[in-house]
Length: 252
Image (cartoon, rainbow, N blue to C red):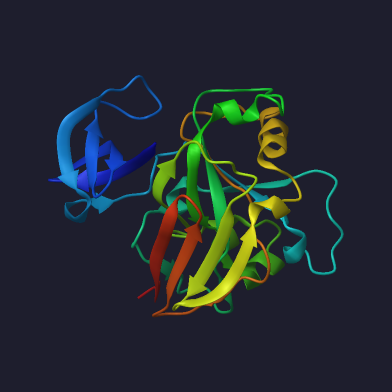
């Protein structure tokens, strides 16, 4: 199933995508919903960030190709991204005026949590996932290296694009991820190359943090991400989900 969150006629709704149309739900996909006969062509709606999370978590250094000379970690490296950094498809990534230096895209598979859960086993972890979307863990490198924490390097406003849809019934351990800047491919790798698979990450996080419906987990990025500059267009494409596309602008 393919879920979308969208704006139509001034109203924000969730819907199920069927072909080139979206059918409105009576409520969110995290609740008991019904699919209505209220239908819009996708071309007539504005796709939004695919859910409204209470928190966004992310995994660092989760592909060997992204480690460089560093040794793999013994357990997942988890950090927070603020909900105010979340934007949807076609919304601009804004490079802050206060920042000077390199800003990179980081294409990532994102898991969307289905229900409230705590102390989840690896065996049960994927039962608590509603579905998957594309994400971009935008990163300001000088802040990332220079600050004591990654709060502004990873969570400046607009630094967490996600979308276009939440897609269910995918195998998160075997999806091809591609990232392009201005049409040029800068990242390509399969999630088979995760150092810590998603069940391990969910179980690890849930041992100390209660996960809530709509919470998002960015699962890490492969290889060497591409640099972003004013005027660029970045695309994150994941097999079975689609393409997340965002323009890049300097803050004015």
